[in-house]
Figure: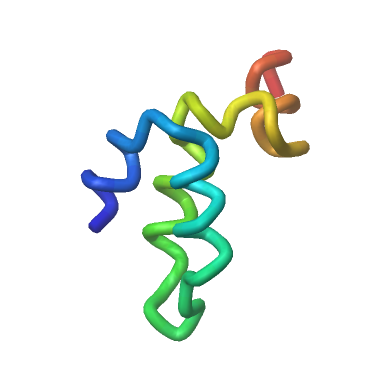
Length: 53
């Protein structure tokens, strides 16, 4: 699942995945979503990472 999430090229699709994620399945998929380049400018984590944080 993490590999598939990391290859998503649409922020809309990535947003849908995140919205329907079950946290009982563990954080790995959400970490993959946060590391996806599509997500980089859309959240605080991405902005910090983009600025060298």
